[in-house]
Image (cartoon, rainbow, N blue to C red):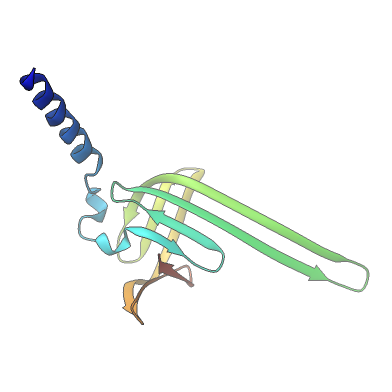
Length: 124
């Protein structure tokens, strides 16, 4: 009976450690891991390389005859496929997004920040 219990504990531990393995692209870039928020977007980078990106943009156009408002929502959940000093790329093909890294993660005023595509993200 004790052998079965130890076997279950060992298997459970192996599964947990296997699921939390750091993605090779993030091993030397662990400062990118976490949930990042900007004014219009949320970017969540998990240790295993899974990335979720959500963006909500609003725009308004007014002229003499009409007021026009529009809203665009983008959601992507995909693996991290490239991370170097200049680019962070998630997904493949049509379901992908490429970010230009303007400034890698850095600390300012006791907060972690990251600048992608000219937009400032703060880690939460």
